[in-house]
Amino acid sequence: MNDEEAVLSCQNGDREAFRHLVETYQDVLYGTAFLMTGNAALSEDHVQEAFLSAWRGIRGFRTGYPVKPWLVRILVNTVTAQRRRRSLPIDPLEVAEAQSGVGGPVELAESSESRQRVRGAISALSDEHNIVVTLRFFAGLTVPQLAQALGMREGTIKSRLHRALQRLRKELEELGPGNSDSDE
Image (cartoon, rainbow, N blue to C red; front, top):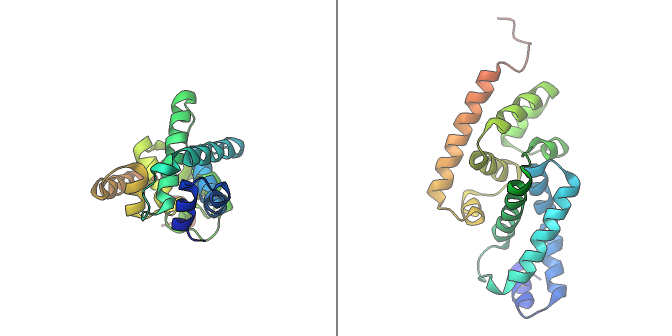
């Protein structure tokens, strides 16, 4: 069963078809929630709440569109609402440390010192920049998927991502060199 077939079956009330969506996307949603919260138990709660919201709203999902960005958007809204209520910080490197082979800023986090530098730089970003960096580089969403997940235009996502990466570079430069290997 592919995603479109699962969505159509779910829209007709088939709960078993929803299992396909849960099994396909639970790891991505959990990883994203963990990157945003840094808390395993809270991440599990957010994922469960996001899937419940998705089930309740599945009839409104427009077939022919990808499911992943829709689910990520529900999750981001869930986490963001909870963060507003509790003022929870985002710590995207907690999951990145457990994942291997992820590109982008994660490669900077190979050593403990580098992880601390990157963690500090990411935490210094504004929430809007933190979210686009987290979803792009740690959750692996493309720019079109980010636009769909966050309900923004692709141009807005590109400019936010560009500004976020500039700010991240600046923060890393201000924090100083990560290695004492260069004695020049």
